[in-house]
Length: 491
Image (cartoon, rainbow, N blue to C red; front, top):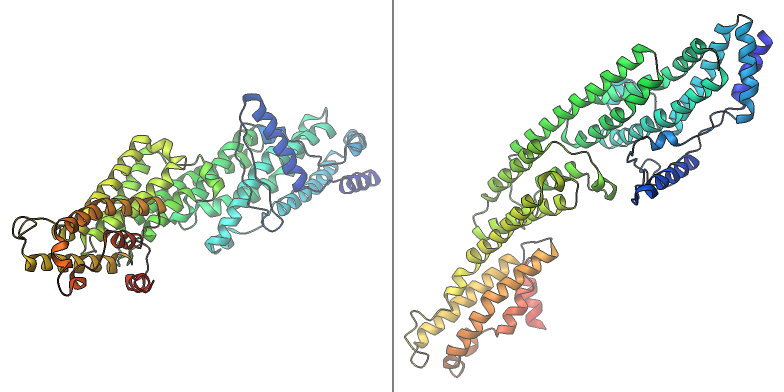
């Protein structure tokens, strides 16, 4: 029996098949595409890992497709021999020794699989000391390891136990539980460490990913594992992750609502609070835009409402009403664009998107009124002495002089303002041109001739309508206007 025991161990070790990630992912991709072909849709369950960033892939679960992915944990030819040895040892009263050898070797094999999947053995204290960027990577690896671990490795391990210990139900059950316990508890330990760790907004969606991964595999785990302690621990970690997600979202809401920095964005562009909030919600990677993990609608609406209120408050730090409008346009449009390209749009709805687009248009109208009303008032007929023929030259000179001063001041200031979105920037310039250029051209047509023949005409009529239109193209670039002015004059 001692010799059989040694042979049993030797065959198990010699015929263990190392986990081949590339083949595994290729198999998952084929299964995914076969599922997709049945209903005309293509769902990629993962994205290929690069050589340097093997954890960048993500799994988007569809039912049990991972469970339909078979991997050989032991060379198939060895299974028959292992089964014969196991039967002889059990018949001879060496069941305990058989179980110990099998579970010991297979535990080590599963531990090695976790290493290959990028899961380290870390204590709760060690996990909670990891800085966020590194922790984020470990959380992503954990999510993949949970799905592969349960749906592929443990499913395969259960199948292997069923084959080797066929006909001995109690032994088969004990062997699987003993083999799987260490792997499962290592995964649960990390999940618990994250769940009870410090809550911060950037963790929100990664914790939701972890919760979903556990929720997806828990039914399979409960079906396979009969060790009540392990099952209770798994349910407990799932509950803790759920509580952590709720608590983290509450922290996120509080952070958005209470962010009270009064420092203005000098160019009126997108505030870091806006970027941080939307990036935290969406994680902005291309693969993340397809995520299904979003908070419930009332809480999401409250969060974004708090963000909008905070932005409205931050806009008041600007004394210039036009700058307030540009700041709000930039930030509200950024929110709209991020939402409309994500799964969050389904929760908020098209009406929510349309309403915010309407707000952007209202802010654009408010900008035109605040920025250009004074300059345009210089181009009105009132107060310059009646008809074009007897208009007061002094009044005309004053009007042109004031318009030039107003325009040059706007140009100097607003070329330093920034509108990052190219379409919005172009629409604003078109709106300005449509307001200002026809008014200037009309005023020049009616009254310009009365000054052009006089001395120092260039002092008052400094620009043609085409000049002004060219200058408008320099606005909102985020660079000092004087440089543009000198460059244009020199050319």
